Length: 213
Ligand SMILES: CC(C)(COP(=O)(O)OP(=O)(O)OC[C@H]1O[C@@H](n2cnc3c(N)ncnc32)[C@H](O)[C@@H]1OP(=O)(O)O)[C@@H](O)C(=O)NCCC(=O)NCCS
Image (cartoon, rainbow, N blue to C red; front, top):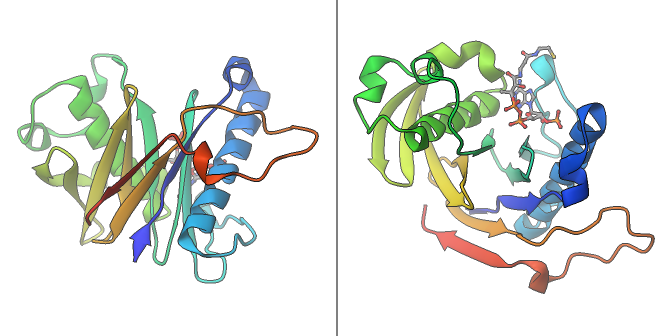
Protein backbone atom coordinates (compact mmCIF):
# COMPACT_ATOMS: atom_id res chain seq x y z
CA UNK A 1 0.00 0.00 0.00
CA UNK A 2 0.94 3.66 -0.35
CA UNK A 3 1.25 6.16 2.50
CA UNK A 4 -0.21 9.62 1.86
CA UNK A 5 1.44 12.21 4.10
CA UNK A 6 -0.07 15.71 3.70
CA UNK A 7 1.69 19.01 4.39
CA UNK A 8 -0.41 22.18 4.78
CA UNK A 9 0.64 25.79 5.34
CA UNK A 10 -0.67 28.04 8.08
CA UNK A 11 -2.16 31.37 7.03
CA UNK A 12 -0.14 34.55 7.79
CA UNK A 13 -2.78 35.38 10.44
CA UNK A 14 -2.28 31.98 12.12
CA UNK A 15 1.49 32.45 12.00
CA UNK A 16 1.13 35.72 13.91
CA UNK A 17 -0.89 34.16 16.73
CA UNK A 18 0.89 33.56 20.03
CA UNK A 19 0.63 31.10 22.94
CA UNK A 20 -2.43 28.89 23.26
CA UNK A 21 -4.24 30.40 20.25
CA UNK A 22 -1.27 29.60 18.03
CA UNK A 23 -1.07 26.01 19.26
CA UNK A 24 -4.81 25.58 18.77
CA UNK A 25 -4.59 26.87 15.19
CA UNK A 26 -1.66 24.54 14.43
CA UNK A 27 -3.43 21.61 16.02
CA UNK A 28 -6.62 22.29 14.06
CA UNK A 29 -4.72 22.68 10.79
CA UNK A 30 -2.82 19.44 11.38
CA UNK A 31 -6.13 17.62 11.89
CA UNK A 32 -7.29 19.03 8.57
CA UNK A 33 -4.13 17.56 7.00
CA UNK A 34 -4.94 14.27 8.71
CA UNK A 35 -8.44 14.28 7.21
CA UNK A 36 -6.87 14.77 3.76
CA UNK A 37 -4.43 11.92 4.41
CA UNK A 38 -7.40 9.70 5.33
CA UNK A 39 -9.24 10.73 2.18
CA UNK A 40 -6.21 9.96 -0.02
CA UNK A 41 -5.71 6.64 1.79
CA UNK A 42 -9.36 5.60 1.42
CA UNK A 43 -10.04 5.38 5.16
CA UNK A 44 -12.64 7.17 7.29
CA UNK A 45 -11.35 9.59 9.88
CA UNK A 46 -12.14 8.19 13.31
CA UNK A 47 -12.07 9.69 16.80
CA UNK A 48 -8.64 11.21 17.49
CA UNK A 49 -7.91 9.99 20.99
CA UNK A 50 -4.69 9.90 22.99
CA UNK A 51 -3.25 7.29 25.34
CA UNK A 52 -0.18 7.09 27.57
CA UNK A 53 2.29 9.97 27.20
CA UNK A 54 -0.23 11.73 24.99
CA UNK A 55 0.44 9.27 22.15
CA UNK A 56 -2.25 9.07 19.43
CA UNK A 57 -4.46 5.95 19.67
CA UNK A 58 -5.41 4.16 16.43
CA UNK A 59 -9.00 4.39 15.18
CA UNK A 60 -10.54 1.31 13.48
CA UNK A 61 -7.03 -0.15 13.03
CA UNK A 62 -5.67 3.06 11.46
CA UNK A 63 -2.60 4.66 13.06
CA UNK A 64 -1.97 8.39 12.81
CA UNK A 65 0.71 10.96 13.48
CA UNK A 66 0.87 14.74 13.21
CA UNK A 67 3.45 17.48 13.56
CA UNK A 68 2.93 21.23 13.66
CA UNK A 69 5.45 24.01 13.35
CA UNK A 70 5.08 27.78 12.94
CA UNK A 71 4.64 27.83 9.12
CA UNK A 72 3.57 24.29 8.16
CA UNK A 73 1.88 21.20 9.58
CA UNK A 74 2.24 17.57 8.48
CA UNK A 75 0.01 14.55 9.05
CA UNK A 76 -0.23 10.93 7.97
CA UNK A 77 -2.27 7.79 8.57
CA UNK A 78 -1.09 4.22 8.10
CA UNK A 79 -1.89 0.55 8.76
CA UNK A 80 0.81 0.19 11.46
CA UNK A 81 2.44 2.48 14.05
CA UNK A 82 3.70 5.53 12.16
CA UNK A 83 5.53 8.76 12.96
CA UNK A 84 5.97 12.08 11.16
CA UNK A 85 7.93 15.17 12.10
CA UNK A 86 8.49 18.52 10.39
CA UNK A 87 11.08 21.19 11.15
CA UNK A 88 12.31 24.40 9.57
CA UNK A 89 16.05 24.22 8.88
CA UNK A 90 17.42 27.16 10.84
CA UNK A 91 20.63 27.31 12.90
CA UNK A 92 20.17 26.46 16.58
CA UNK A 93 22.42 26.75 19.63
CA UNK A 94 25.90 25.28 19.26
CA UNK A 95 25.49 22.54 21.88
CA UNK A 96 22.40 21.01 20.27
CA UNK A 97 24.10 18.81 17.62
CA UNK A 98 25.94 16.84 20.30
CA UNK A 99 22.74 16.56 22.31
CA UNK A 100 20.84 15.06 19.39
CA UNK A 101 23.46 12.54 18.22
CA UNK A 102 26.65 10.90 19.46
CA UNK A 103 30.06 11.11 17.78
CA UNK A 104 29.71 7.81 15.94
CA UNK A 105 26.39 8.98 14.48
CA UNK A 106 27.91 12.30 13.39
CA UNK A 107 30.70 10.33 11.70
CA UNK A 108 28.10 9.09 9.19
CA UNK A 109 27.56 12.50 7.56
CA UNK A 110 28.76 16.07 7.20
CA UNK A 111 28.31 18.07 10.35
CA UNK A 112 25.92 20.78 9.14
CA UNK A 113 22.48 22.06 10.17
CA UNK A 114 20.78 20.14 7.37
CA UNK A 115 22.20 16.90 8.80
CA UNK A 116 21.18 17.97 12.28
CA UNK A 117 17.55 18.32 11.15
CA UNK A 118 17.68 15.01 9.27
CA UNK A 119 18.78 13.28 12.48
CA UNK A 120 16.44 15.26 14.71
CA UNK A 121 13.26 14.78 12.66
CA UNK A 122 14.08 11.12 11.93
CA UNK A 123 14.49 10.35 15.62
CA UNK A 124 11.35 12.28 16.55
CA UNK A 125 9.36 10.44 13.87
CA UNK A 126 10.55 7.07 15.20
CA UNK A 127 9.87 8.03 18.82
CA UNK A 128 6.38 9.19 17.84
CA UNK A 129 5.72 5.91 16.02
CA UNK A 130 6.77 4.10 19.20
CA UNK A 131 4.50 6.40 21.23
CA UNK A 132 7.23 7.48 23.63
CA UNK A 133 8.30 10.96 22.58
CA UNK A 134 11.54 12.68 23.48
CA UNK A 135 12.07 10.83 26.76
CA UNK A 136 13.94 8.13 24.77
CA UNK A 137 15.91 10.49 22.56
CA UNK A 138 19.30 9.03 23.59
CA UNK A 139 18.11 5.47 22.90
CA UNK A 140 17.22 6.22 19.28
CA UNK A 141 20.38 6.06 17.18
CA UNK A 142 21.14 6.73 13.53
CA UNK A 143 22.19 3.31 12.23
CA UNK A 144 22.95 4.19 8.59
CA UNK A 145 22.40 6.86 5.99
CA UNK A 146 21.11 5.06 2.91
CA UNK A 147 21.09 8.06 0.54
CA UNK A 148 20.13 11.75 0.52
CA UNK A 149 16.47 10.98 1.27
CA UNK A 150 16.61 7.83 3.39
CA UNK A 151 18.16 6.71 6.63
CA UNK A 152 17.74 3.97 9.22
CA UNK A 153 17.21 4.52 12.93
CA UNK A 154 17.90 1.88 15.59
CA UNK A 155 15.38 1.97 18.40
CA UNK A 156 13.92 -0.66 20.72
CA UNK A 157 15.68 -3.56 18.94
CA UNK A 158 14.20 -2.55 15.60
CA UNK A 159 15.57 -0.91 12.45
CA UNK A 160 13.18 1.88 11.43
CA UNK A 161 13.31 3.08 7.82
CA UNK A 162 12.77 6.83 7.52
CA UNK A 163 12.18 8.91 4.37
CA UNK A 164 12.77 12.67 4.12
CA UNK A 165 10.89 15.26 2.10
CA UNK A 166 12.33 18.76 1.66
CA UNK A 167 10.65 21.99 0.58
CA UNK A 168 11.06 25.72 1.30
CA UNK A 169 13.84 25.26 3.86
CA UNK A 170 11.77 22.64 5.70
CA UNK A 171 12.39 18.93 6.17
CA UNK A 172 9.82 16.25 6.97
CA UNK A 173 10.73 12.77 8.20
CA UNK A 174 8.33 9.83 7.95
CA UNK A 175 8.67 6.24 9.18
CA UNK A 176 7.43 4.02 6.34
CA UNK A 177 8.27 0.33 6.89
CA UNK A 178 8.99 -0.09 3.18
CA UNK A 179 5.63 1.28 1.97
CA UNK A 180 5.51 3.55 -1.05
CA UNK A 181 4.98 7.22 -0.26
CA UNK A 182 2.94 9.82 -2.17
CA UNK A 183 3.61 13.23 -0.64
CA UNK A 184 1.06 16.02 -0.91
CA UNK A 185 2.37 19.54 -0.36
CA UNK A 186 -0.09 22.44 -0.38
CA UNK A 187 1.63 25.82 -0.58
CA UNK A 188 -1.36 28.18 -0.73
CA UNK A 189 -2.85 28.85 2.71
CA UNK A 190 -6.61 29.20 3.15
CA UNK A 191 -8.79 30.29 6.05
CA UNK A 192 -10.30 27.44 8.06
CA UNK A 193 -13.27 29.36 9.36
CA UNK A 194 -14.96 30.37 6.10
CA UNK A 195 -18.70 30.80 6.70
CA UNK A 196 -19.36 28.28 3.90
CA UNK A 197 -16.38 25.95 3.83
CA UNK A 198 -15.58 24.54 0.42
CA UNK A 199 -14.54 20.88 0.39
CA UNK A 200 -10.89 20.42 -0.70
CA UNK A 201 -10.57 20.11 -4.47
CA UNK A 202 -7.80 18.14 -6.20
CA UNK A 203 -6.62 21.31 -7.95
CA UNK A 204 -5.93 22.86 -4.54
CA UNK A 205 -2.81 20.70 -4.43
CA UNK A 206 0.05 22.77 -5.78
CA UNK A 207 2.62 20.03 -5.84
CA UNK A 208 2.43 16.28 -5.60
CA UNK A 209 5.31 13.86 -5.46
CA UNK A 210 5.37 10.09 -5.54
CA UNK A 211 8.46 8.16 -4.62
CA UNK A 212 8.94 4.42 -4.64
CA UNK A 213 9.24 2.84 -1.19
C1 LIG B 1 5.96 13.78 20.87
C2 LIG B 1 6.92 14.95 20.97
C3 LIG B 1 8.32 14.46 20.64
C4 LIG B 1 6.47 15.98 19.90
O1 LIG B 1 7.08 17.19 20.12
P1 LIG B 1 7.12 18.48 19.16
O2 LIG B 1 8.19 18.38 18.15
O3 LIG B 1 7.15 19.63 20.07
O4 LIG B 1 5.71 18.57 18.47
P2 LIG B 1 5.15 18.15 17.03
O5 LIG B 1 4.36 19.30 16.56
O6 LIG B 1 6.16 17.59 16.10
O7 LIG B 1 4.15 16.96 17.41
C5 LIG B 1 3.04 17.22 18.21
C6 LIG B 1 2.12 16.04 18.13
O8 LIG B 1 2.80 14.86 18.54
C7 LIG B 1 1.82 13.96 19.02
N1 LIG B 1 2.34 13.35 20.24
C8 LIG B 1 2.40 13.89 21.48
N2 LIG B 1 2.96 13.00 22.33
C9 LIG B 1 3.23 11.89 21.60
C10 LIG B 1 3.80 10.62 21.94
N3 LIG B 1 4.17 10.31 23.16
N4 LIG B 1 3.93 9.72 20.95
C11 LIG B 1 3.54 10.00 19.69
N5 LIG B 1 3.01 11.19 19.32
C12 LIG B 1 2.85 12.11 20.28
C13 LIG B 1 0.54 14.72 19.27
O9 LIG B 1 -0.43 14.33 18.30
C14 LIG B 1 0.96 16.16 19.08
O10 LIG B 1 -0.01 16.98 18.49
P3 LIG B 1 -1.37 17.40 19.23
O11 LIG B 1 -1.01 17.72 20.64
O12 LIG B 1 -1.90 18.54 18.45
O13 LIG B 1 -2.27 16.18 19.13
C15 LIG B 1 6.95 15.58 22.38
O14 LIG B 1 5.74 16.27 22.58
C16 LIG B 1 7.11 14.54 23.47
O15 LIG B 1 8.21 14.09 23.77
N6 LIG B 1 6.00 14.11 24.08
C17 LIG B 1 5.97 13.10 25.12
C18 LIG B 1 5.94 13.79 26.44
C19 LIG B 1 5.45 12.91 27.52
O16 LIG B 1 5.95 11.81 27.74
N7 LIG B 1 4.43 13.42 28.22
C20 LIG B 1 3.83 12.72 29.30
C21 LIG B 1 2.73 13.54 29.91
S1 LIG B 1 1.35 13.68 28.82
